[in-house]
Image (cartoon, rainbow, N blue to C red; front, side, top):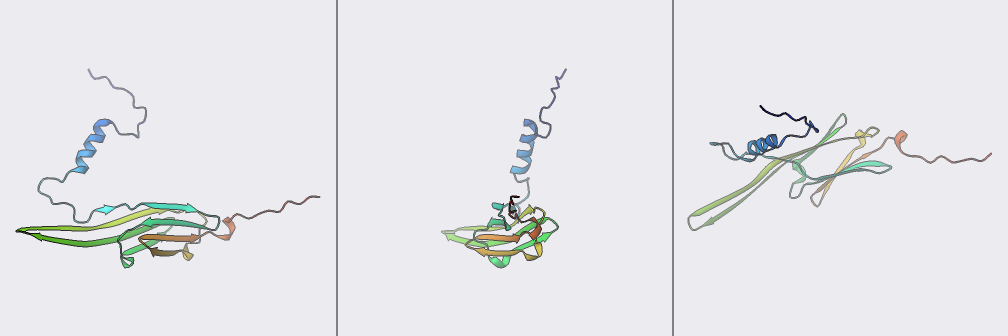
Length: 147
Protein backbone atom coordinates (compact mmCIF):
# COMPACT_ATOMS: atom_id res chain seq x y z
CA UNK A 1 0.00 0.00 0.00
CA UNK A 2 1.39 3.38 -1.05
CA UNK A 3 0.97 6.33 1.25
CA UNK A 4 -0.02 9.45 -0.69
CA UNK A 5 0.84 12.77 0.87
CA UNK A 6 -0.85 15.99 -0.21
CA UNK A 7 1.41 18.37 -2.10
CA UNK A 8 1.77 21.63 -0.21
CA UNK A 9 3.12 23.50 -3.26
CA UNK A 10 1.48 21.84 -6.30
CA UNK A 11 3.28 24.16 -8.74
CA UNK A 12 6.68 23.00 -7.44
CA UNK A 13 7.97 19.81 -9.11
CA UNK A 14 8.65 16.73 -7.03
CA UNK A 15 12.22 15.51 -6.66
CA UNK A 16 11.51 12.68 -9.12
CA UNK A 17 10.13 15.15 -11.70
CA UNK A 18 13.14 17.44 -11.24
CA UNK A 19 15.62 14.57 -11.71
CA UNK A 20 13.75 13.28 -14.78
CA UNK A 21 13.84 16.76 -16.27
CA UNK A 22 17.56 17.07 -15.48
CA UNK A 23 18.35 13.88 -17.38
CA UNK A 24 16.01 14.73 -20.26
CA UNK A 25 17.49 18.19 -20.84
CA UNK A 26 21.14 17.73 -19.85
CA UNK A 27 22.35 14.94 -22.09
CA UNK A 28 22.59 14.57 -25.84
CA UNK A 29 20.39 11.71 -27.08
CA UNK A 30 22.29 8.75 -28.55
CA UNK A 31 23.13 9.22 -32.21
CA UNK A 32 22.55 12.98 -32.26
CA UNK A 33 25.14 15.69 -32.47
CA UNK A 34 25.10 18.72 -30.24
CA UNK A 35 22.39 21.24 -31.14
CA UNK A 36 23.47 23.40 -34.05
CA UNK A 37 21.99 26.65 -32.79
CA UNK A 38 21.38 26.73 -29.04
CA UNK A 39 19.15 29.56 -27.89
CA UNK A 40 20.65 31.74 -25.18
CA UNK A 41 18.94 34.06 -22.72
CA UNK A 42 21.12 37.14 -22.29
CA UNK A 43 21.11 39.05 -19.00
CA UNK A 44 18.88 42.14 -18.86
CA UNK A 45 18.13 45.14 -16.69
CA UNK A 46 14.67 46.70 -17.06
CA UNK A 47 13.65 49.79 -15.10
CA UNK A 48 11.51 52.90 -15.26
CA UNK A 49 12.31 56.53 -14.60
CA UNK A 50 9.68 59.27 -14.34
CA UNK A 51 10.18 60.05 -18.06
CA UNK A 52 10.90 56.69 -19.74
CA UNK A 53 11.17 52.90 -19.56
CA UNK A 54 14.64 51.44 -20.22
CA UNK A 55 15.77 47.92 -21.07
CA UNK A 56 19.52 47.12 -21.15
CA UNK A 57 20.70 43.78 -22.59
CA UNK A 58 24.24 42.34 -22.37
CA UNK A 59 25.29 41.15 -25.85
CA UNK A 60 29.10 40.93 -25.75
CA UNK A 61 30.81 40.20 -29.05
CA UNK A 62 27.62 40.63 -31.06
CA UNK A 63 27.61 42.80 -34.19
CA UNK A 64 24.99 45.56 -34.25
CA UNK A 65 23.63 44.41 -37.62
CA UNK A 66 22.93 40.94 -36.15
CA UNK A 67 20.58 42.35 -33.48
CA UNK A 68 16.85 42.79 -34.15
CA UNK A 69 14.38 44.42 -31.77
CA UNK A 70 10.61 44.41 -32.21
CA UNK A 71 7.64 45.61 -30.21
CA UNK A 72 4.33 43.80 -30.73
CA UNK A 73 1.56 44.88 -28.40
CA UNK A 74 3.11 45.00 -24.94
CA UNK A 75 6.03 42.65 -25.74
CA UNK A 76 9.55 43.84 -26.54
CA UNK A 77 11.56 41.06 -28.23
CA UNK A 78 15.31 41.14 -28.78
CA UNK A 79 16.82 38.58 -31.15
CA UNK A 80 20.30 38.06 -32.48
CA UNK A 81 22.68 35.62 -34.10
CA UNK A 82 26.32 35.08 -33.19
CA UNK A 83 28.89 33.18 -35.26
CA UNK A 84 32.61 32.96 -34.59
CA UNK A 85 35.01 30.19 -35.54
CA UNK A 86 38.43 29.28 -34.16
CA UNK A 87 40.59 26.62 -35.80
CA UNK A 88 43.71 25.10 -34.18
CA UNK A 89 46.02 22.60 -35.89
CA UNK A 90 48.71 20.73 -33.96
CA UNK A 91 50.76 17.63 -34.91
CA UNK A 92 48.09 15.62 -36.67
CA UNK A 93 45.37 16.98 -34.41
CA UNK A 94 42.73 19.34 -35.63
CA UNK A 95 40.49 21.15 -33.21
CA UNK A 96 37.63 23.39 -34.19
CA UNK A 97 35.70 25.40 -31.71
CA UNK A 98 32.66 26.95 -33.17
CA UNK A 99 30.90 29.47 -31.01
CA UNK A 100 27.59 30.17 -32.60
CA UNK A 101 24.07 30.49 -31.46
CA UNK A 102 20.91 32.46 -31.39
CA UNK A 103 19.64 34.59 -28.60
CA UNK A 104 16.14 35.67 -27.82
CA UNK A 105 14.76 37.58 -24.90
CA UNK A 106 11.33 39.12 -24.43
CA UNK A 107 10.17 41.68 -21.89
CA UNK A 108 6.56 42.56 -21.12
CA UNK A 109 6.23 46.33 -21.26
CA UNK A 110 4.14 48.31 -18.80
CA UNK A 111 1.12 50.33 -19.92
CA UNK A 112 1.41 53.98 -20.85
CA UNK A 113 4.46 53.95 -23.15
CA UNK A 114 4.87 55.75 -26.47
CA UNK A 115 6.19 52.69 -28.37
CA UNK A 116 6.36 54.49 -31.74
CA UNK A 117 9.09 56.74 -30.24
CA UNK A 118 11.27 53.84 -29.00
CA UNK A 119 15.01 54.12 -29.63
CA UNK A 120 17.81 51.56 -29.44
CA UNK A 121 21.57 52.03 -29.15
CA UNK A 122 24.39 49.48 -28.97
CA UNK A 123 27.59 50.57 -27.22
CA UNK A 124 30.37 48.36 -25.80
CA UNK A 125 28.34 45.14 -26.01
CA UNK A 126 25.25 46.54 -24.29
CA UNK A 127 22.00 47.17 -26.16
CA UNK A 128 19.87 49.92 -24.60
CA UNK A 129 16.23 50.29 -25.63
CA UNK A 130 14.57 53.49 -24.41
CA UNK A 131 10.81 54.03 -24.63
CA UNK A 132 9.33 57.35 -23.47
CA UNK A 133 6.20 57.43 -21.33
CA UNK A 134 2.98 59.04 -22.50
CA UNK A 135 2.35 62.51 -21.09
CA UNK A 136 -0.76 61.41 -19.18
CA UNK A 137 1.16 58.78 -17.17
CA UNK A 138 4.14 60.95 -16.26
CA UNK A 139 4.06 62.09 -12.65
CA UNK A 140 3.24 65.74 -12.21
CA UNK A 141 3.33 67.96 -9.20
CA UNK A 142 0.11 69.45 -7.88
CA UNK A 143 0.45 72.76 -6.11
CA UNK A 144 -1.28 73.00 -2.75
CA UNK A 145 -3.26 76.19 -2.25
CA UNK A 146 -4.31 77.71 0.99
CA UNK A 147 -7.61 79.54 1.30
